[in-house]
Image (cartoon, rainbow over all chains, first blue to last red):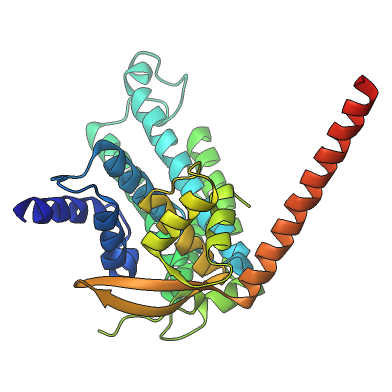
Length: 214
Length: 106
């Protein structure tokens, strides 16, 4: 009997890979199926089952179940993940090039003509991480049909627009323009008529599912 | 349409089923070839519900565990019919051509 509860605990831990909203709605049901599928006497989740749950959970986190009718929202969410990916790559490239520009100041011009001070590097890295977090946050919240996220995305896009002007190095300029273009496309998609229906229904989540009572 | 999706819709074609029932049914109708893992099944069910091709018919508590029964929506029935017809047409074409090939070979 204690073997059963060990197994259940193991599965419950693995379910943590799923988005919270999904767990709340389907967690108990999925757990029942997992327990039904487990052979008698199994004490903890097998390797294959663990890999299955982790990959499915992560997949679900990255691919919100936006109905096909709201394809513009899905496109926007994908673009936001792409934005996060591009920012991550840019940040890694920037960090990797740090020792390089120490010796070849001005050639790569990532941070300007000279080696930037440690404070500027730290701030740059923090800004990059914040930007990645914002992309991911907005992708998730918009994918769940949160109207405030759509508004906040638009405000953030306006802030990037303001950032277009001002002194920057060529690399920074390219990065900001790229972010602005992706952001612009996202905002345009989020406010298309096909997106409106997805964000509208008050008190309901996507696909007509009930929001569980508080 | 992915094979797993097609099989899940097929499992629900004439009656509602719960998660574990779908897994065993899909295994049976595919002759043991398609074994859905619970993770795959629930990703597919989530997607199908979002697309409004299936819906929850009822819920039961069996041995203290939640069991949810799914059924096709009218849109789901339409989609499965269209997909089945498409596959049937492809299969018919394949068989016809194989017969022709057999005819010329002999």
